[in-house]
Image 1 (cartoon, rainbow, N blue to C red):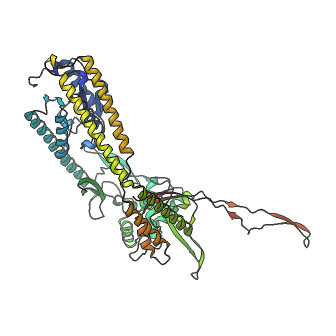
Image 2 (cartoon, rainbow, N blue to C red):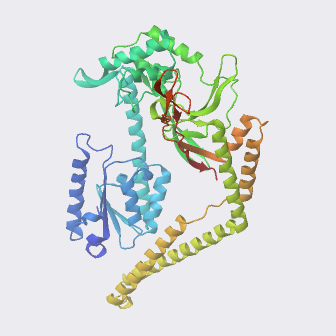
Length: 558
C-alpha cells in the first residue's frame, strides 16, 4: 500500500515518465505488444485515480528489444536522460525489475541517478512509491533489484539446462539451419521439437565439396572458383568464400550429430573495463551428441577431410615475408593485394612483379606494378613527414591544452547553470507562497536559464567535435622517418620493412579502373611486289593496354 503521500499535490501528469518493458517472468503466451498494453492500462488507471490524468504519449517509452544491461536498453537510456530535467519528478512502471535486472554495477548506477535527481519511482505491482532520498525506501528498492537479478540468473541457468537437455536428446535448437538442411518441427509425444531435414539441392552441393576436397585433392579456393563457374548460389554473398568451405568441411551436423557450446562467451578485462568476447572452440572442446536427423556425409569421408585440414596449413612455419607491403594494401572489393612474380622455367624473370587483387576474377580491378606501388608509398611517407614538421613548428600540442581548458570552463559553467536551475525550482516549490517568485518573473528567468544551458551544451558538443588530436609529433616524426629510410634501403630485410610500415600505416585501399585493349592505328600502303594494298601497324601486333590512374585511400596510424 502507499504511504502518507498526497499525490494530487505532489504530482501532475506532465511531471511523469512511463517506462514499459517485457520481462522473461511474464506470460510467454502474450506477445510483447499485448503485455505492454496490459501494463499501460494499469498505470493509466492509477494516474487517473491519483493525479487527475494520464501521462502524455510523448513521455511514454516502450522497450521492445530488451537486454540485461542498461547499456543495451536504448529506450531506458532516453528515460535516464529525461530525469536530468528537474521538471520530471517520477517514473511509472509495472514493477522495479522493469528498470534493471543487471549486475550490482547497473543497480548502483540506477540508484544514484534516481537519488540525486530526486526522482520518485511508482510501481503498480505492488502499488508503491519509492523515494530514493529515504534510507528505508532506498534499501527496499535495492533489495528488489537484487531479487530481480537473482531471478534472472536462475532463469538463465534453468533455460541453459533445458537447452542442453534438448541437444543431448538430439534436437537442433539453433534458429538457422546449416547449409544442406532445412529446419523443421516434428511431434515428440505431445510436444513439437526442432530438428533438421535434408535440403536435396544444397545437400548435393555439400557432397560435391567433400568429394572435391578429399578425393579430387582440390584446394578450398579452387573449389570456390569451380562452384562459381557452375553458377551455384553461395550461402552468403555473391561468390563462394574459402572461409565458408572451411566451416562446412568441419560441420559435425553433416554426419548426423548435434553440438553444444561450440561458441563460448568469455569475459575479458582490458584497461580496467570488462567486455564480452565470443570465441569458437576447436573440435573436441565442445559437446557432441547423436542427432535426430539423418547424415548426408559418411563418417569416413568427413574424418578424412578433418585429417587433410590438419595436414594442410596456409602459412608454413618457415615462410618469410618477401613483400614489404603485405597486409597493408587492400583492393576496393575488400580483398588483399598480393605480390605476383612471373618466371620462366629456367628461373629468369619473364615479366616485372605486380600487385594483384586476390579476387581479381570477380572485381576486375586492374593490377599495379610492384615498384610503382613502392614509389607511391614512399611519397605517402614523405608527405606525412613534411606535415609533421609543420605541426611541430606551429606547436599543435599547446593548442590541445588550450582547447581542453575551454571545454573545462564550459563544463564548469554548465554545472553552475544546472545548480542554479535546481535552486530556482526548489525556491518556487517552497511551502510558503511568500517565499516564491511571482510566476511571470520565474517563467522569464527560467526560460532565459534554459536557453543559456542549451547554448552551453551545444558549445561543449562543438568543442569536443573540433578537439585537435593529442599527438606526440616528435615520436611520430621519428617513426615515419625510420620507415622511409628503411624502405629506401635496397639491402634492408623485407620483413623489417613490413614491420616498420605497419607502425605508420593502418590500411591502404586500392582502386583502379579495368584496363582495356586499344587497337593500334593501321597505316595503309601499296605492296609493289604483290601489286595490292596492304595495312601495317607502327605498334606490335595485338595492340596496347590503357593505363588508368591509381587511386589510394590511405589510413595512417596516429
